[in-house]
Image (cartoon, rainbow, N blue to C red):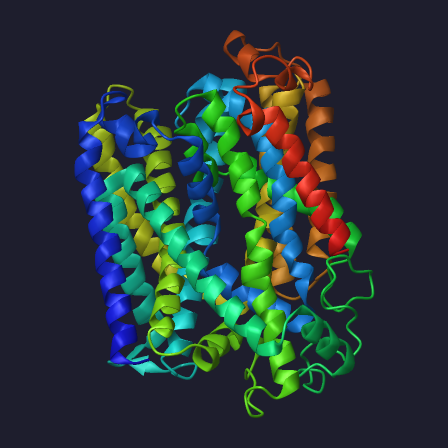
Length: 560
């Protein structure tokens, strides 16, 4: 890294923190919703464009830049399914979940669950949402960003700075800076900085992809090289990669593929993870809760669905290009020492001075935007679901103060939890395994809750508790190595078990639908497809939904 690169990184950090602080002052000038409404939900002023960008930014982190390139270096485009399958679950959010959330005017999803079922369900979801925000969203983002910075600096694993592990130093610095502007600015600071950071992130990813694509000679040369040369890791014991790994440029694989992601595992398992992540997770859905109205709440997720096309080409494809370049000998015989260093290897071997700093800043952007989103969601959950619930007289000023304290505490906890992801073979594997164990009961309860009027509060609570217990047992078996199977199929089987538990317990403990819950359940699944569509052309959510489905179906046909 040259002084120019470091100057770019320093200026970026100052600009982002300054933007977040400025948002903290400007949000006080809002006209509706009170101070608390502006701090946690940006005064319900977000339009569809900001919602879509903010959802995409909250989802995209350094995990995508590092782990998707790592997985692609080993197995090709198949892990891009986690990006394109999201398009279908975002359609579900737009059509079926977002209108009910806006109709209830809740600040948190646990609050929604209480209105639909009971307080016990709210308590369980609050705890799980706090865990996912701090560990799954923020912890993994900090760990991956620290790993990238270590690689860019050329520090070996286990290196120290001032007598402290370098990874821990980077984690602390990034966590503190993100916590600072999130604490001061609230959700408005989060969505402002996310919008800017998303642009920078995409610029950095596009630069790496285009430079690598041109260097290898285009798509034809890439396909030819991959088909006629052995994989660089084929001779490495324990890599899991063989010469005959199939078509690296295919998204659909069979059961014999070394990636372990057979097409039916993705088809059955991803919806379990995706519905929780995109439709029921506070960190992501909070942007929809802050929408101006139902039209923007519906269009925002559909806009985000289009953005989810990009990661396959700019986050996954670079790993495949790196394989082809190594096979061609483009780096003079050099290659990543392990697959986890793929993206860092591309940055240091492809980019000139200045661009290295830009892409490194994109790394920081990806980590910081995910962390800020998780911190604001954590603050909202604690303020509304833990404090205001037990003390309804708390005013906006007290809630904001609680939110700021929570932001500081959440930052500390995420810094402590982030090194845990070093246990897994890849970071991407770790985060998706954790989601598969946490998501299943929540997915079951939300699906049955919004589509089945008979679903009772007691059955929902039993399902959440029993499902979490099943997930915890499965996690322990996997973490200790006692049993490891196809985690996508395991997620599907856990969902089937949770749905079964909820149906049986509803029959055993029937309850009448509460009057306040009547607007929160669809009478008919076709109901949200009727009525005012909100506009013309692509401003009509029904038209845009069809376009999204056709585009993603076409992509799968091309890359099958």
